[in-house]
Amino acid sequence: MLLGIAIGDAFGAGYEMQPRYGFTLYMDKYLGRNSIKPGCYTDDTQMSIAVAEVLASGSERSMWSFADSFVKCYSRDKRTGYTSGFTSVLNKCKNGQDLMFKVGGNSEKNGAAMRSVPFGILPKLEDALGAAIQSAIVTHNTKKGLMSAMCIAAASHYFYYNKGEPKDLIGYCIKACMGYDSETDAYLKEVDKMQGIDSNTLLKGNTGVPCDAMITTGAVLYIASRFNELKQVMMESVLLGGDTDTTASIAMGLSAIRPGLDTLSLFMLNDLENGAYGRDYLIQLGEKLFKKYPSQ
Ligand SMILES: [Mg+2]
Image 1 (cartoon, helix red, strand yellow):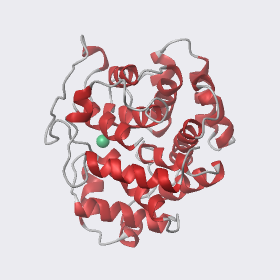
Image 2: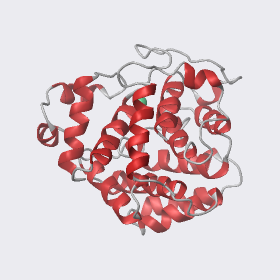
Image 3: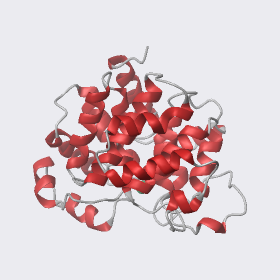
Image 4: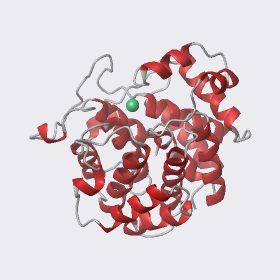
């Protein structure tokens, strides 16, 4: 799961905000973009690590502990990929309380969804949803922000605890969120009916996946529920365009839960960054989580 998040993030980062219809081929190596070096992940993975560390530590799953962990993870390993506004807030924070007081907290973007894959490992669905809400409240305390986080936690829980077939994933997430945000609820029902990717329905007139909580959720749930091969999950995520690192990170994190990473091209694992918080660290953290919350 964690490696899937990082690989999707690092690979997707090379394609972020490119026009959707500009691609003619699927690149088989990482592309660097701005200051994000090839193979390096961004904010999506760092925030997923932050929530995973709280889960692994067994400490209280509160907005305060998640906020603390966001600040801690950023401070020890300053990453690009966060918005400039959030970066400047993070740079001024010493702890989670600082963050809670300094950040706007009412975003409808996809930042709460992008860090919610790890929550699915909690054995009870309501705990997974509750933890996703506590994490989301820090920055995305809006109906759409909270529902996006709950949907991704539910999706991860569905795969991790083998609750059913991938094709029934979206229905499960809709049910889990109990219509919390009516617009997202109606949108996901439409997405679930799509026969193949219909960009009018899925992207709502956007030329790629925008940094929007609801549309990002629709895109990743569609991909994770309809494509089994990880390679295809990556390709579809990138080909949707827009916020590709977030789409690929969430979709790959979810999809890697089931078959694992074996079908991926080796370069994706081998060329993933392996510094202090890179590949080996992700593997260790994943093992710790699996020990604490075994899926079977
Ligand atoms: Mg990112």
